[in-house]
Image (cartoon, rainbow, N blue to C red; front, side):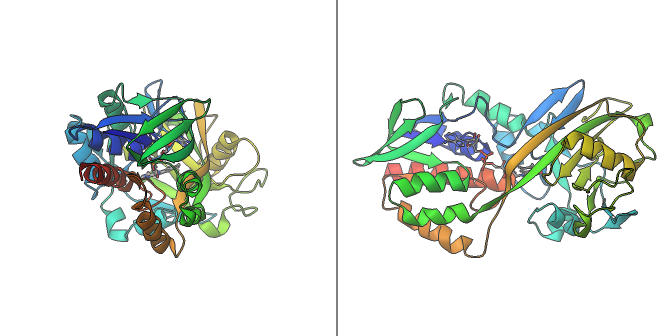
Length: 365
Ligand SMILES: Cc1cc2nc3c(=O)[nH]c(=O)nc-3n(C[C@H](O)[C@H](O)[C@H](O)COP(=O)(O)OP(=O)(O)OC[C@H]3O[C@@H](n4cnc5c(N)ncnc54)[C@H](O)[C@@H]3O)c2cc1C
């Protein structure tokens, strides 16, 4: 039995991991980019570990430690070190409850869950992606953007950008909701149009490296969030040129998790609302004003997320169950990923694994 997983973000990789361990399943993962992981991007630079997308997962979530144990990297899970978040009010940093700080960043979690802290991996969030990619070597196919789906009797035909096609018995669609919605609509699942209503919020993250002696005062806690009422407001920070404040939050990356910066250095990660101008300059200027940084950063690295974290709207659950119900009338196909049952990395792992198991059960009938 052939199964194709479309999309090699963490949800697709988790689905494929579930399927390759199912007897009699021949699995292929088609990924449009040249790398796996989707929005999980970790770069190693001059002894720093730089996260472009997620930097951790909630400590109470079991999905990643369980997956890591299966992959033989269970001992690479690391706990959050510095705790506590501040609120930048426009004039001062004051302590704020963790749940409120998370809400400012669009993290949908209960206060108690956030209060338990976060965990990550010693080599960064891409560590499970790398381990999965190694286990899925030969299964993972890059630069294979899926352009269309058609039914071929009780099987599927998948068209790849550039002209080639794959025939398969089952599919796990592990794409962002808007992309999955388009493909499903084209095979007659008209309800899938509703998946386009999941909004993917744009954001920019900028990592900046400094020497520790450039800090005005020692960093306290794991970072700060900016009062949402002043994001974008004029004169919100004591900036020399009174530029609009696009900064939403800053993580003290080297204080939060171990090994993120070499000794004597700090790594900061700024979250910016998209706007005009150079985000690295904006991040440094605004952080310098808030944290009293002296001089220029050693280097900076910006990641642009035109469609970043998904946010669901009220009838999402109803739409989703209707779409899933319609999928049962087609040859085996399941959806997985951040657009459906939770946007966090752990929820995506769970969603991918469930989709993989669903297809395996379906095909075993
Ligand atoms: C900036 C940022 C910070 C975040 N921080 C956190 C955090 O700290 N903790 C946390 O738990 N979560 C965080 N998240 C959320 C979490 O990282 C994501 O929701 C999750 O990783 C998404 O995984 P996914 O597999 O569903 O989708 P994606 O990662 O989007 O993967 C989809 C894959 O499909 C591929 N693809 C797209 N179209 C096609 C096509 N036509 N054919 C083939 N392949 C295609 C893409 O290239 C991509 O590889 C963050 C997200 C962002 C953007």
